[in-house]
Length: 243
Ligand code: 5HY
Image (tube, rainbow, N blue to C red; front, side, top):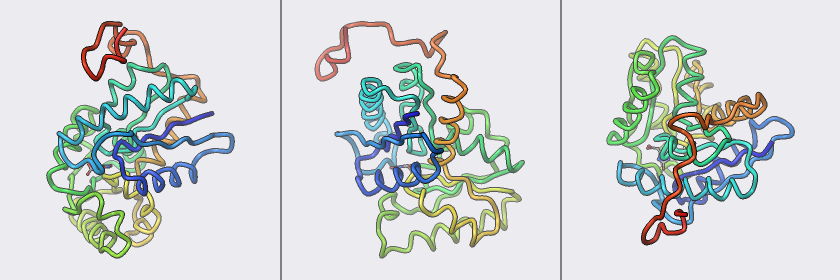
């Protein structure tokens, strides 16, 4: 089984980290192919960043279709381009926010999300509403860490994240925490150890869900709104997307 894991930002060290996390949890026989768009923001921290990165995600899906991917993971907590990506393939496409929410609700009645910048918290809240998990989530908390601070080994990202997770554990009446950034993929076990409660990380959650769906032969439905886009001409730099 071949799973394409896409880091929608263009920071190679974070793509490597996400790839390592995915490979660590993949079942024997699952081949993880990790990639990032050729063009786009080094980190996704706003609606604008997300809109641009979504095009990059779609280009990686198109590449994956040519390479015969069995499933896809979109490894950014905004799940950029998720529904559009599903229109381009019969394979399952899993966003790490969606996957994290699903798994957290299977191990706790209430969870909180701990993410990076405060300005991105609204993006997670919109996804909670879109996916129907708002009533399971007590809080979307922000550490106010820029995403790329997670790539700074000399920084205090871990301590800042741990402190906000401790506040969530002690104040939110929750049973689990969902990490709100693909760049936190390597911190899960250590955080769970230090916090004493389950910590759900989206990349590994999405890889396991993608494996499950693909092994059950369950792919993206082509009946209804996720059918392939109707062929039509595209103008300008998107001309090669058109018929
Ligand atoms: C992510 N940004 O997972 C999101 C996190 C965020 O570049 N990878 C990013 O803050 O929304």
